[in-house]
Image (cartoon, rainbow, N blue to C red):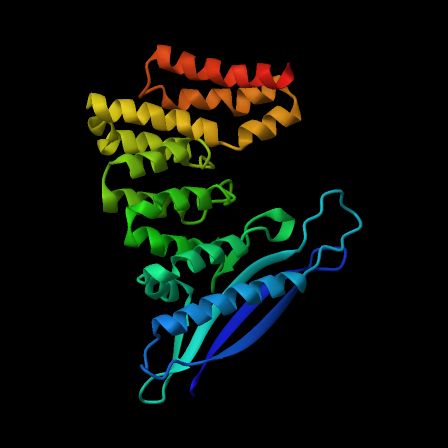
Length: 296
């Protein structure tokens, strides 16, 4: 077979209820014949086809509900894809998502397409990130293996990983706690991993963020912060995290001051083992001023 088959299995909801519907879409592209392995050209075409196909798949699950107030542009719940091609012996090779992105991430020229894949797998049913299908249960959020493949190539992609985590439903974590831990173990403590730890304690907190952050402190982060230089940088990164946190603007628009205190300002206390009372008060005062400015 001189073609590469891209098979996408999708699951979502149809009609005005939660009746599930599974759809399989197959696409074929020409194989680069300069190698029996997947070349950079092959990987690029596969990525482009995946992005187009997922956009098309979303249209097959239109949000036509009449019994809800909130609508999204689709009701696609989960996806899974396989890449199939023949090797030099004519035997069929099947590459799943994780292995595919591990190959693709080795090519710097493909990084922008990998990020586009992460973008297109966001905004599924109910406006949340699409889930990946698993053989036994619900898999990790779609795009997880894509962004992790980039992060494993370079710590410079950690900021993109934080952006990705912010699109996850972290009240229903799957593997994120282990992924975050693996990244920090791989790169050790530095500016990038400190940003990740801080985000895990604020915008990416979810079920286990506060507990995991305290584990970081107990397993090396406190020692790292003994340096005045590192501690100063860490404080600046905390301030940056609160400035970037989109939940601040969500709570401001909601207009309930107590909710703003409970769900925004109280997060500053998550850093009470790191910050002095004066520093905590300064950040809380800054956040409270955001409320006063918005309401004035």
